[in-house]
Length: 290
Image (cartoon, rainbow, N blue to C red; front, side, top):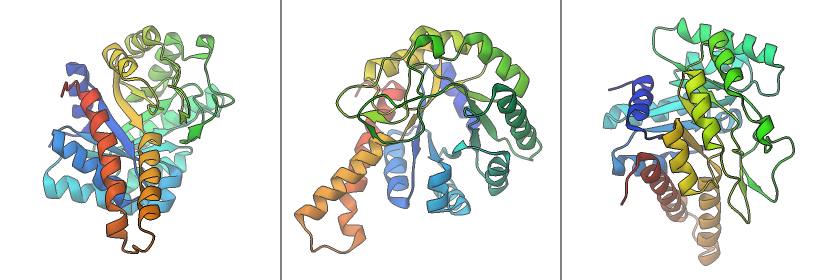
């Protein structure tokens, strides 16, 4: 089976993107896996620090690896938004395929120093682990938004600059870069999220020389996604959309039958709703027309 680095490289060559979806439990994991399996495309499972606290670090590894091994399937695990070297070390030791060190709240000097330390630690292992870093501010949480969150970069002057991306990659040795190009964590309630700066994506990819990750994918229009992938985005993170489908469907199911108490019964429709969302996104990212 190909490792994650090979899968990302192949996606770049085909001008498609790999879907990255976050989980907090086995319900979301099954929804994502079944959607990917049905389309026969690789998929990345993400768990943030909060999600890892809930599901368990080694438990997340065991769950994803069990699907990978039982079905001989290209499903991979990423430690999303990890904010310290100690946190990176912990997930690398546990068996994750990739890790994102998020140093966006640090000074550039500190971000470079710790990111480089994370890369060096990952390289010292006897297996291939991808290290990603983030540049710019796109908000900090996956939720429905009344307005663009304070501190998010919405002015093109604040977006990641190609020359800064190039310098950051050269100084740290990262494998993937998540830039600020108009994207936001979370999803606006009553409108599509702002348009991405497609030209900036293309410039950053050319200057940085490493595959790009698009964070804050929920709420972006289909056409904007297509343009971003053609410009150089290789992986797309989706979280809020599946959380909303999960919550809303579960609320409706329990409202319709308040006497049901078996989780495998009242969770079924919520899992199917998440699966539908993931399937639509994977089709789009993979360039499928049907």
